[in-house]
Image (cartoon, rainbow over all chains, first blue to last red; front, side, top):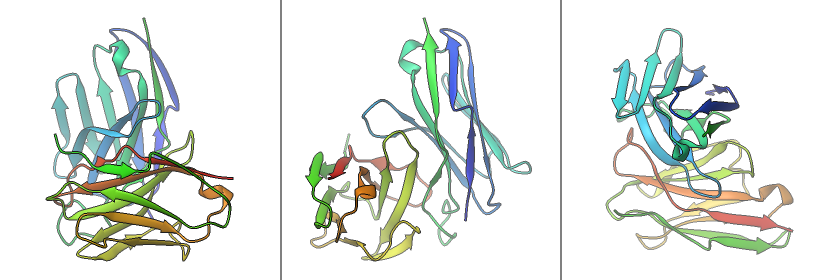
Length: 117
Length: 113
């Protein structure tokens, strides 16, 4: 089955600086890669996702890049703000297209992002 | 914005007892999921459900677990004989089309004592 590795487990950055979180996956059939933000005691919330037919996607201060050959994808947050502090999870699945394999998400172990004022 | 609703928010049960966790997915969604998250750990896939049947399940989803959509709106997860290690936050999720981002419910914290 799919295995998703996520690094680092904890990331502390100064407010205003950029943060980068990296994930690798093992199953070459995976074609959908979402990122979730989870604040303490709350549900995971989707912040951005990317499909395997795209190499990069951006939404304001957040961007995700995907390297299919190397089987890794990354989350980039620019101009970090205190409210960005949370645990971020990457995930992968092979169910992005109708009829395509498994559709359960395999999550990474999470990155605790701390924004220092 | 439509939400996935889960009840109860917190349930405490004795080991060996049966529990049913309830979810009301977003009304036009067709694919339904249960995930769990042990405190401080990653989110883990349990089961997916489509067209009134299980479409995929993980190794965690053993014979003690079952899912049902009894009335076209509720989506339930039953654990027949709870174990201490079943203590976790259980999240329901739904999507309209596969390959779209999940909308997670607010979760049910299950504590087995």
